[in-house]
Length: 303
Image (cartoon, rainbow, N blue to C red; front, top):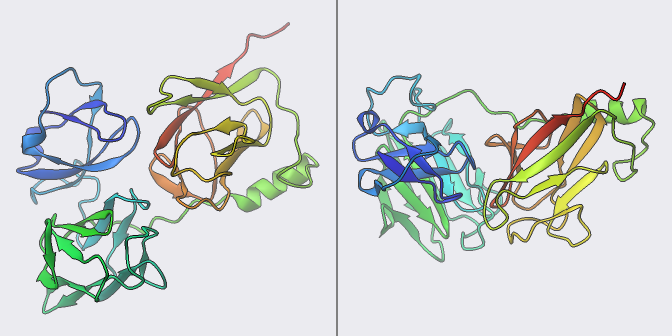
């Protein structure tokens, strides 16, 4: 079966024997997580394989379904927090825009919008008097019992409830201390101070999503700012990208770092939200709806 990624429109192979009606998958090209259904089959030639995150077939092997572990979880498949996967560790989880257990920056979500709670071995969802309502499988509800792969919609945010999905906590990668030490070693006093790039190696960012797909931009300065501001080194006309969204710093051939600049919607590397992290060849960076591939090119020896 072939499905189309809603993010980058890539056509992907999806093994029909690994699910019955629907499955949560991740696109290998743009890393977007989305719901694929049996009726979503398309015609065409696939360019990659969809990664199964959660299947509606409980017998699917753990190695095949990436998040198949005992426990309950929520996966955000649409909205500003798209890609977040949260384990339900407590018997009650408050979801809202402020001071909640799961904070959604969606402006259509109320301050305390809904709660998920466990009662007599089952999970339930209850609306907390929200302005725009709580929807379960496209029906507005006040209180309802949850089952595996139920779809929860709050405002413009769509989440999938899973009854297994447990995995080890994902710590947000943060290499801030490592970067500070490199700045001291290279005598760079602040992130804004420019410093020379290493010889013999070039670094590029290739755009993998429309409308600038296939464009390539060389990193010619360090730090290299990515954002929606015209003053950024790489200007992105993406409404979900902050004016100064993130930056790349080059300290050496093997020491290239990506740091989020307190952006509104976060910076993601290979599907994981980060604060700062060292980059490797072919890493995929997502900011807003834009995916950039980090590419390293070695130059011929000048000798």
